[in-house]
Amino acid sequence: MSIGKTISEVRKSLKSGEYTCKELTRSYLDKIEKHKNLNAYVTVTADKAMEQAEIADQKIRSGEDGDLLGVPLGIKDLYCTKDIRTTSCSKILSNFVPKYESTVTQNLLDAGSVFLGKTNMDELAMGSSTTTSYFGNCYLPYRASDNPDDEICPGGSSGGSAAATVADLCVASTGSDTGGSIRQPAAFAGLVGIKPTYGLCSRYGMIAFASSLDQAGPITKNVEDCAIMLRAMAGYDPKDSTSLNVDIPDYTKSLNKSVKGLKIGIPENLLSMLDDDGLNIIDTAKKILVDIGCELVSIDISSMEYSLPAYYIIAPAEASSNLARLDGVRYGYRSDNPRGIEDLYVKTRTEGFGDEVQRRILAGTYILSSGHYDAYYTRALKIRQLIKNDFINNGFSKVDAIMTPTTIGPAFSIKNSKNMTPIQMYLSDVFTVTANVIGVPAISLPVGLSRNSLLPMSVQFIGNRLSEELLFQISSAFEKEVCFDSLRMNIRRSIDA
Ligand code: GLN
Image (cartoon, rainbow, N blue to C red; front, side, top):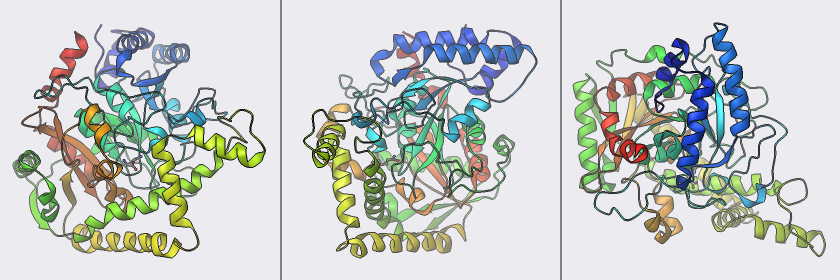
């Protein structure tokens, strides 16, 4: 029996009876065990997965159908899963077992999918490397050809989901994206990931990082899987006051549609940040777009350079407020033997949060303090509005979508990530944060390999609000010109060995 297929391949095999969902799930669980060294999962829910598989088999036998029926998934450990430990990979939540299910995971369960377990991530979704997890580093099953001794970082914060998906330790996975945490790990792994329009997926039951930026989304092996997953995850939810009350279309209907004549904007000013390798990938991507019939349009969205500073004001500010609830009183980790209530707060939060999270709480609290609020937070919100206007006036009023690199370069090694300063790490989000800051969708997909390391390199397509169908249309045409499988061939080989 072969696993490591896409959603539609798995569905076909389940339907035809080539294997049962229980057999499939068991083989995934075995593979997770075998590749434990990747540290892609922090909790494996084997028993529950087998129960869900049994139910899926019964439904399949009785003739029920559904895009995700019986499909085994990996779930980022930031989604609250009822009666299953949910930690956001922080010590402060290391004993937290939610009494409720997040809306997104409930939607996936309702669609009949099977959850294999919870995937590793940067602590509380803050990071770009999955090296700040309380449960230790996660690894991509890759080696750079020019430096084969160093372990490769899966990006972050959804690094466990990317590693699990590319190593075939699940069919597809969920991530979350506040400033790039779906797209950057997807790019490092050579996978597809979409951050939808703000409000398309409910945030109910997702451990909050920065509420005005956080969005759920999938990380998948191809564009079709991404379309299937997003449709299942999205939908209006009265439990989230920012949830959009819009119909969720069948995104797979957008696949295979012609893209002839669509205008793709290229913000040339941004490309100056790239080295030859990065420019080469952009050139390849441009050629593909021309080949599939799109028209390239140079655009100038100069405000984009202010997205990163605005993001690193807004995100820590909101994080400091959201994380105030983690104080050792209501739930989660509590420090032993405190001397009074103040000492309880101080000790619990000092011991419970890692360095990066503490850095953000400190920065955020400063930003929101009465003397600095206007100078930083209010100003960042004004800049946010200016960037939005710039995108409308100089971007979406002229072109259908905008293409940028997803990351500055390919996946870095774990060793290098440890030597990076926080600012260097923040700079790795330079292309991704804008879509979050202005609330629009963006999809990342691989283009080719970097010349020296032979690691995947990706671009992202950014669309106007609720243009997911268009983004899937462009991505599916683009994907056909890229040999995704050969991109990941060396990994497959190393995983199957
Ligand atoms: N890397 C970014 C940060 O650390 C984005 C994280 C995310 O999208 N969750 O803030």
